[in-house]
Image 1 (cartoon, helix red, strand yellow):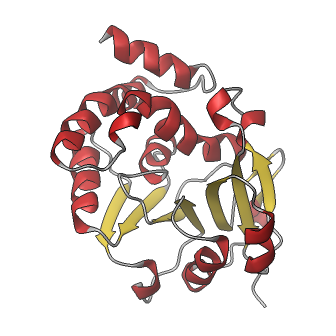
Image 2 (cartoon, one colour; image 1 turned 120 degrees about the vertical axis):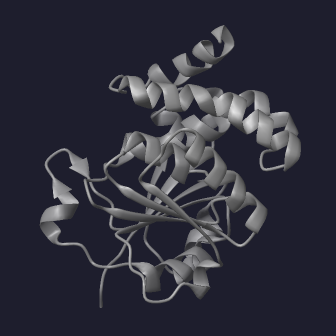
Length: 224
């Protein structure tokens, strides 16, 4: 338990306003992911000891840069073991998150972990993003799934245009578009995508060495 509390300090160092329930949910992730990772490899074996930094805090960089509102609908494309969607669902309990992946066993892990910690605002689907029909979302999130060009191609049909009043709230930004987590030199990838994203370096948000050369990329959705 002491180890988990120490790992949680990495999260609470940057986020102060968690409820007791949210802290319990975050604390439970350590044992749950370790247990499931022994059955199904959803996280690199060498990274499991860095779960709170490399997966949970990394996912929550989106929460540090943006805010989702009550009733917003967010889809996580290629969620894998539940990142970034599951930590974001803990952080924003009044926002609805739909986590999808083409690998069924990974979705089963996400479902089991979400159920174990009592997440009520998270749904899952075993499907490829490009196969989703007749559903719209306010925002798409994704982490290390595909080049920006493909991500944007998959995202556009899934997005609904939000009211301008919803996306502007004084000092915070409610994203309406694609928000993805990426690393390395993005110049060619952005150029090939034909998009003009807002790029934020995560090290400027979380001063941890791991986040050097890791970025949040936001492509707003503009209906033509």
